[in-house]
Length: 137
Image (cartoon, rainbow, N blue to C red; front, side, top):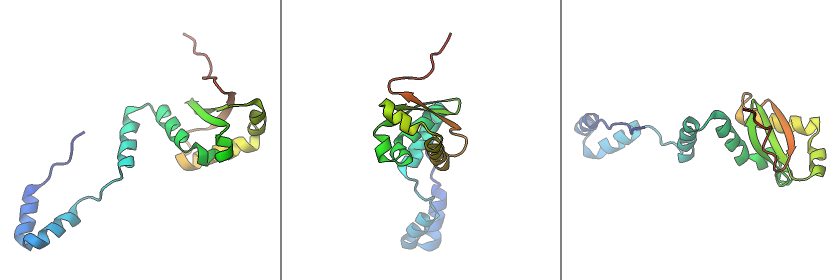
């Protein structure tokens, strides 16, 4: 990744045309608007990490708004595989409360609203400490 090259001839021409004082404001007006650092870092991470890993990091960072503060204390997104988000739940009683069609649809709609339809198509609630289905071979 390289920085854009400054066009010094263009700046020289503007200084010659407008004069030294006004040329600075004209040059500043022609520059692209600065981007937030978070936007640049997200773009960089998106190119470096696999899509599922980047998606799970985004979901984990905003999980308290997706699930609500009370629910987020007892469950957390663990990983994303084949469009299924695996959510670890700390206690069996919370699993019974959260593993309902209504709550699943609520979480899923919030995830899809914030990150798009293609990120996640289903949720699976698993006990805490489980790291997904065993891989064979």
